[in-house]
Length: 190
Ligand SMILES: Nc1ncnc2c1ncn2[C@@H]1O[C@H](COP(=O)(O)OP(=O)(O)OP(=O)(O)O)[C@@H](O)[C@H]1O
Ligand SMILES: Nc1nc2c(ncn2[C@@H]2O[C@H](COP(=O)(O)O)[C@@H](O)[C@H]2O)c(=O)[nH]1
Image (cartoon, rainbow, N blue to C red):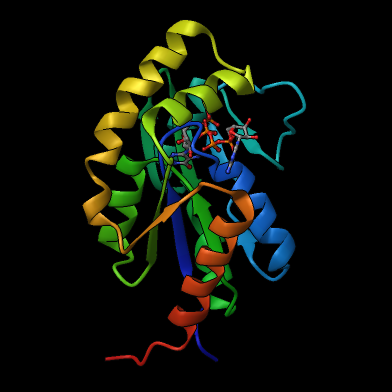
């Protein structure tokens, strides 16, 4: 049995990774989502084990010490990391898995899984990015300011990815990602 694909979807905060990922999972029900661990507090409506595993600083440090994270990164004020076992077991079982993570973490995953599929979701413009993050209404003004500064640094690292997909419209972005996944499944192993 062939292994599943490890797909990494990155892009600046507010570009629409979560929105595109949910839409993609409706179109591809077999696609498994990697639920991350974070020290961030839950936003309204977010559920433990569904959106994130919400951890204290100490619990997160223990996960690092016990080598339970495939990668982790500090992003603005909080820590985020990908539970290792779930990703490895999913791929071994022949299923595709998608990680929705920021750029530092994605580059660490690339060191361990160079055969992964690395997709960078880009906004149509920086103005539209800011409008989306402000419009979501979940962050304070100072957090939005910090996330916008990080966004410019992240966009500069796009060249390390295999694909750049513009999220102008959710359906179009999903179709592009679906095409990438189909093509990756047809790739001849070298
Ligand atoms: N193509 C699109 N056109 C217009 N608005 C969009 C589009 N995609 C997403 N949005 C909106 O932009 C906002 C941010 O989207 P989302 O929360 O999915 O971003 P994100 O990249 O997952 O952010 P974060 O990394 O901070 O979690 C949401 O309000 C969402 O509805
Ligand atoms: N390196 C990692 N980054 C992650 C992970 N899970 C989410 N993220 C990214 O963090 C920022 C902020 O997320 P938010 O939910 O607070 O808006 C965003 O870019 C996420 O994609 C992870 O496991 N590792």
